[in-house]
Length: 314
Image (cartoon, rainbow, N blue to C red; front, side, top):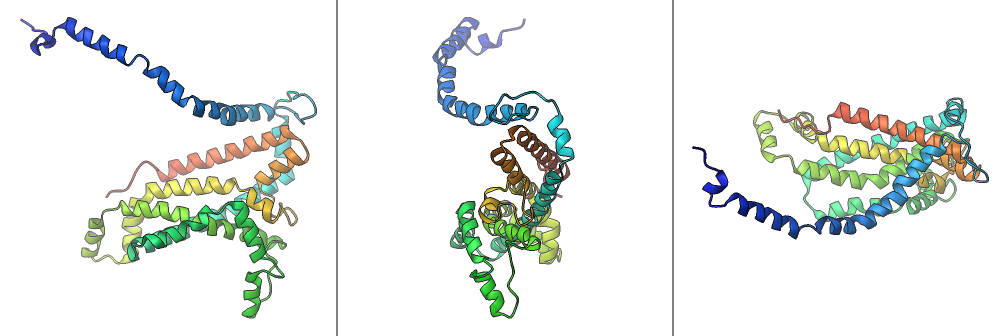
């Protein structure tokens, strides 16, 4: 004879059903209350994120120029973009900037984080490192414009003081992008260092002790222990840094405005000039969509190659 589990536990099926009904009745208004709480954030997302994104995608297939209707032209903007020399130049400039700035930030942040992790536990030093990140791009751009000025900047005064010629940091096409990359490295170093430092703290000390017992030196432990175990955090930092560098705009506007000779005319600056300088919003939206797809592909490839959700534990 099979006995009902509810009866064995002293609870009849009828009583259990009534208990479930009373619980559901008590929580009947929770869903409405939850929607009420998230409605401001949801409304903000729809107005300031979802709608502008969908509107931008639609405009990329039109010839919208503010004073007039948005006429559907299909993929004409993208065909035009493929033959636009200024677009390809802006893409090359952006990639060159990303390689310099993202590469510099990641390498220097990793070295700094390892030094902090191995040599000091001072919270004061960590606080000082992250200060440049708290400075806005506009303020950083203005300050560094003064410091790198070819006539009165302190950087050129120091170069002249040690017998080197002055450098036209923002007016020489060969120096403009490296100068912008240096500012980005200075500003982003602290934030990525802290992220990597937190990842280093999650690595057990016993692993390093085992490495020392096996006779490994600091360089070998860095390559065979630190990097493999830090890979998920490092991959996340790489992706975030590259995305942030692709979005450079305000720093360029404050310092060079895309010059000299379009040597710093990054994609974001080109999009801005097309949209708000020439009022060609349709084509600007198409370039924006192209930039989004480029960043999407790069991020997907990075996640696949780095296996961001996996860590090497052996």
